[in-house]
Length: 458
Ligand code: GDP
Ligand code: ZN
Image (cartoon, rainbow, N blue to C red):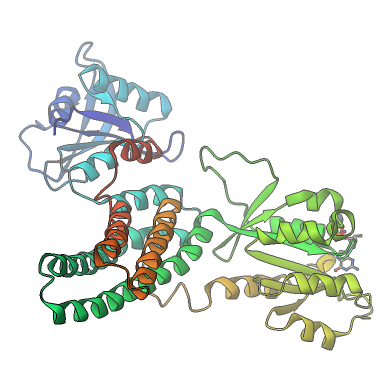
C-alpha cells in the first residue's frame, strides 16, 4: 500500500503544558530534519529522543525549544517512520509548527488516520483500533481499564478462537457433503456440530452479558429517580450533582434532546436522566401515569426509588415497588431527620433483593451509604477479579447479537434434521459476523467511517 506522510497535533488543543506534533510516513524524518537545529535526525538511531530548536528554514527564524522522538519503521504504532515533536508552547506556536511541516510536504491527517494506518498495516486489528477510540473517550478510571483490556487483544483472541471452532465444523460438514458414502462419519459430525455450535453460542452469550457492563461504563448508567411528589427527588438529583464532580461529556455527534447530568460516583458513571421532565413535573407518577413511568423505567439501567420516611406508605408507593421488580434499583427512605411514620418492615419486604438506604437529604445524611450501594450494585465482584475483556462497543454488540441469531438458526436446523449444506450456511454466516468484529471481513467504507470517528491526531 502507498502512504504519504501525515501530520497532526496529537494532544488536546489548549490543554496541558506540552503539545505534540506527530508525523507518520516515509518523509517524516526528512521533514523533521529540515526544521530541527540540533543533531542530524536522518542519522540518529531509531527510538531516540533529541533536544534542539525549531527553525523556519526559509527565514531562519528560531521558533521554539523542543524534544523530538525519532521512531523508525517497523516497530512503531503505524509501522511507518514516526516523528513526535514535543513542544511546550501555547496554541499559536503549536499551530505554527504544524504549518511548517505541512508546508514541507506533510499532509494534515484526517481524524483517526494514524490509527487507521496501524490497522491497515496489520499492527492492530479493528477491535483494538476501536479500543483506542474508546480510550480517547473513556470517562472514568474504570471505563479506561476496560478499554485498555480490550486493547490488549483479549477480545480479538477469544473471537478468533471461536471462529476457528466454527471453521473446523464447516470443514467437517464439507467432508460430509463430498463423501456422503461414509455414513458413520455423518452421524458423528452432526453430533459434533451440535456440540460446537452450542459451545460457541454460550461463549457469545457470555460476551453479550458482559457487553451490557461495557456499554454502561462507556455511556454512563442511565439512572431514573422516581417517587411520589415531595419525597425528595429533586433534592437527591441536586445532591448527587453537587457531591460528585460532573463528568465532561464530549461524545461527538450525539444529539441530546433530554436533560442529563453526568456524575461520577466512586468510579461509576451515572447518567441522571431527566426523562419526561422528572425535574419539571416532579410527580411523574401522578401526572403522566403509571403506564408512562413504566416506559421511562424500561430505558433506565438503574432506578432510585425515593420514599418519604415521614409518612406512611401509600398505594402509589406500592405501585412503584411493582414497577421496579426485576430491575436494578435502590430504595431510599428519605427524611429520616423527621418523625418516622413509614413501616420499615413493609419497605424491606417490598424491596425484596433491592438495597434499602436511609437518608436525610436536607442534612446530607446517608449519601455515603447511597454511593456505596450504587458502587456495590455495579462493581460487586464483576469488574475487578474478572480478567476477560469487556465488549464495550455498540458495533460489536450488534454483530454479536446477529451472530447469536445465526447460530440459533443453525442449532434449530440441526435439531430439525435439516440437510447439512443448509446448516453450513448459518454457521458460515456466524463465522463472517464474528470476523467483522476483528476486521477480517469488513468493507472499505465501514473502515473509513469507523476511523473518521477518532479524534484528530490519533
Ligand atoms: P420532589 O418533589 O420529590 O422532587 O421533592 P423535593 O426534592 O422537591 O423536596 C420536597 C421538599 O422536601 C422540599 O421542601 C425539601 O427541602 C424537603 N426535603 C427533601 N429531603 C428532605 C429531608 O431529608 N428531610 C426534610 N426534613 N426535608 C426534606
Ligand atoms: Zn422536585
